[in-house]
Image 1: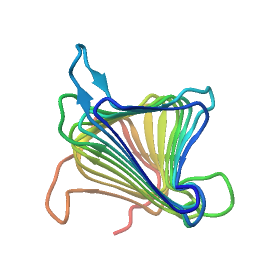
Image 2: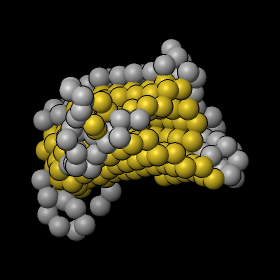
Image 3: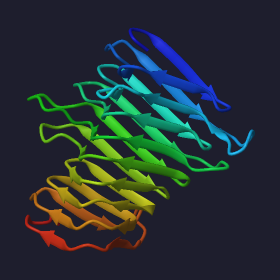
Image 4: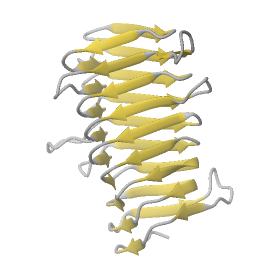
Length: 238
């Protein structure tokens, strides 16, 4: 998906190796989808369908200026040797789905940081979604940033899977849970929402006045567990 449409399916222990960056949905007119699907148990100990970068600065970019999607399912695996960027530019769209039943978990491994609808410029990032369903495991080796203070639409959906960030998570978007867990050194809400039902293991700091913490899903009661310290600096909207 450089200028137009692109589709890549990696199944049945297939391997895709990028020696530099992997970009899905590069230009504004581009639409790209990659599906990494499956684990082949034979020969033992088995081979996982795997897409990965190998360079020290090998990023995976999903929706640079266009529309990009990665589906990791049924035991597939994606590894970035550096960062992952999802919907980083204005008007871009990026989606990463991790989960699905299989012989083993579906996994996304990020050696360094993850930016979801976030950039360091003065303009807002795009529309980005990371969804971690049952059977999905996401590991982030660096800082994770959800949303852009200049405005964007970022959603982190933890729906039965697990997210582990060895550093901090900062939020200017929506973090929604329906089962599953989030583990990090800290979780800071600058703006946006933390809601749903699930387990948050990091300390939570609600630092912005435009933050909402709301347990429950779709109007129903729910239990949102925060195992770390809870610090509310800003005022909660009614």
